[in-house]
Image (cartoon, rainbow, N blue to C red; front, side, top):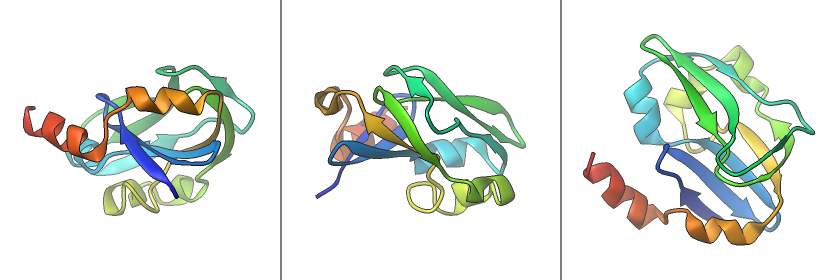
Length: 124
């Protein structure tokens, strides 16, 4: 059973065992506007929790994407290179950015649940 958690920087992480899929939230995609480019990390790259790991560019701005959890990149969504608009169309599905092999799954407890994230966004 997978579990989804959220950061205050608007990344989501779907945890399934020791693997995690990461992307930006619908809120973040809406704030960015039309995404025109995504720079993704290479497989094998190690990152600490909160480390800069990717870049997403829109017609409005460029934004860093931070790793919600520490780990090693195992895959990246190559489809985004051809169609970065997938981030806007399905940010928490087909618009995922990369996958991680988690260093410490227990760190996920420090992230927000969906209900906590929803309340967080309401306060913005």
